[in-house]
Image 1: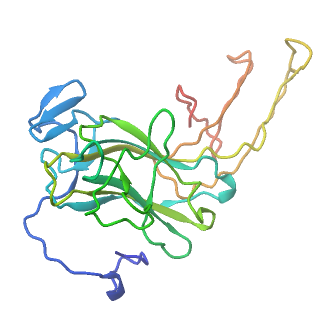
Image 2 (image 1 turned 30 degrees about the horizontal axis):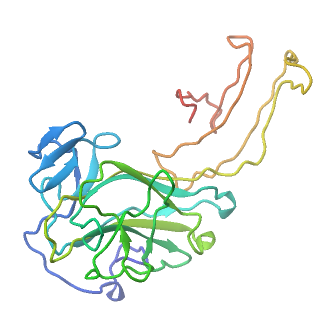
Image 3 (image 1 turned 120 degrees about the horizontal axis):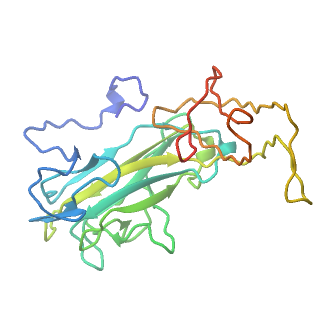
Amino acid sequence: MDTDEDNILDSNEITDTNFLCNIDELWQATTFSGLNGTNLGGEQTMSYGTIPSEASEGIVSVGTMPGSAVPRGTSGYFLLPQVNLPNPGSFNNLRMTFDHWYHLDSPASGGGDGAWIEYRINTGTWNDWTYIAPESTASGGGYTSTMSNEAPSPNGAPSGAVPVFASPSHSGWVNDNVSISSISDINNASKIQFRFHIWTSPNASYERPGWFIDNIDINNDGVNTGVWHHGCISTTNTACQYVANSYGALQRTIDLSGTNSTSSIEIDMEWDLQGSASDNACIESVSYTHLTLPTNREV
């Protein structure tokens, strides 16, 4: 792995050399069409288990060997790109969320195949990959089973049977939330990276579809540093009149480093204006060009 990110594999970055020939790619993009399953609603039944018939968001998902069962004795992961972290002072419910669907060989009591999440952070250099558990709430979420003791124990996993995603039947599309704010030493990190790891037992009773993942999002709610008000306000009357011919503006500089075309800026606004050509409010970008607000008021 290119740990120093210079796009060159140095001798100390090569841990092993293997020659692979004519093997199936484990993780692939899929639209779930043409897989020859029996479709019913949002799922399709295959001879080896049940998979989605459509993505949870958009058209394309990523999954393990779409159209085929994951062989016994498989171990591999889907690697996400590195993400720049915001200033620790603005951390507020910083998290990764994702939708996923899993169908693995696992008894109801656990002890079979497993799928789990790992992360690493950069605090000057990249730390080791570490097991992390998604949050579990009263409404659901979190790991649902445990993995066979045959499996290698991930770094940072609890001792004993390792909690993982697995169940005797397919999960359907479910959503999970991984807290980034609660990661140890996250305040000293500049970057974070995640990977989704799957392992199937060499002695599995059945070969199952594996794991499908979609709608991955890393989000930070930010901090509330107060409000800006322009107009009039009254704590005693139900109405008041704002002054005519008023003009005001709130200007903020936002650091956009680490963002891309999928990033968004969320603004909470409340107004009571006459509108039309008389009174109005608008949001402008760096060059003071009017921005068009979508219906959910995100820009």
